[in-house]
Image (cartoon, rainbow, N blue to C red; front, side, top):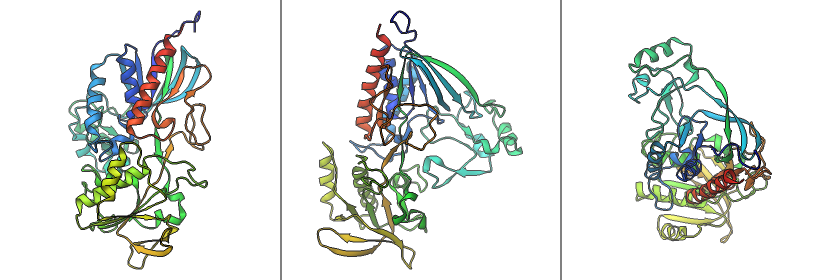
Amino acid sequence: MTDGAPKSQTIAVVGGGIAGITAALEAAEMGYDVVLLEKGPSLGGRVTRLNRYFPKLCHPTCGLEINYQRIKKNPRIKLMTMSEVQGVTGVRGDYLLTVRKTPRFVNANCTACGACAQAAETEIDNSFNYGMDKVKVAYLPHEHAFPMRYIISPEVIGTPEADKIKESCKYNAVELDQQEETFDLNAGAIIWATGWRPYDASKLDVYGYDSSPDIITNVEMERLAAHDGPTDGKIIRPSDGEPAKRVAMIQCAGSRDVNHLPYCSMICCLASLKHAAYVREQYPDAEVDIYYIDIRAHDKMSSFYERVRNDPGINFIKSKPGHIVVGEDGRPLVCGEQIIEREIYQRPYDLVVLATGMEPSRAPGADQPVDVEQDEHGFLIPAVGNDGGQFSAGVAGGPFDVALSTQSATAAALKAIQAVRAG
């Protein structure tokens, strides 16, 4: 600050998911310069991996594509992918962000023609599909990626295969000599939209996530149902490719549990209701059992809950399963006691879906390149820092669905504007 006035009115938005995109657009369309930093190769965050999302159950492309067009048309937004904040110094109106930019080995000449992928031979786990399938080492992040540009995995750099990939590109878009770089960025305010990650299901020993490929998580189920997912939208048993017609949904898998996530993640019940509807749409003769403590369908979502509950092929079982084991036939067996009927059960399923919760990306124990104020769960406090120039948006600040994330982002953009206008 100089004589009470900010040195910079630029707003830095850290994170390019739905909250970061919203915050950046709201601020830029109010006439402020924005730098949008995303550590991955494309925008959209977790929302891009959804098959459908609430409240209208439409495909994420519907909303994201409109926002991408707004970004393209707004000269006040500078987008930087493969960029992660490593440090912050300064005060409101005069922050200095240290940013590390990771090479993608493909420049802006890329037309997404796919020649590099055709030339590649080595395959790696597809992180977009949570490792459920493979992609070539030269790949497009996903079919609706923005920016629509390929990336080359560092595993292949320095090999004859990399040279072959470079030779395949007729647009001189492949740059194998790109290096990691670090640069400084000035900003008057910072919006942290660093998002969330699924809770690690392997920590839930009693549910045997690592014991069977037919025990999956809710985010993996979302990719199974997606047309661009690992099975082209077919909901099948990962173990043998057979249709999954007997499915169990286990609610609060690790959530509301002092040993894992002591809080409710808000979206898990709704996601499982949606997943049950996916199964029934695909297989009219399927049967889905939803094991729950209580169902939390807030506001307008209650009507969707009633619709699902009235489906005769979907059963709601009030119970917290005690454990899951693999039966002699290889099928997962869900074991526990029904609370109301006091009945002990051991039921086989084609597929078991664990509704794991949302953990902030900057959760305790995670790599923390920047020291920001967090609550005991790792969520950022509403006004990050004590100088009134840093703010959280979306799930960085607490468990939200898409609608509430965008509302939070709009609020953060307004606060950031007020911060850089203060004098």
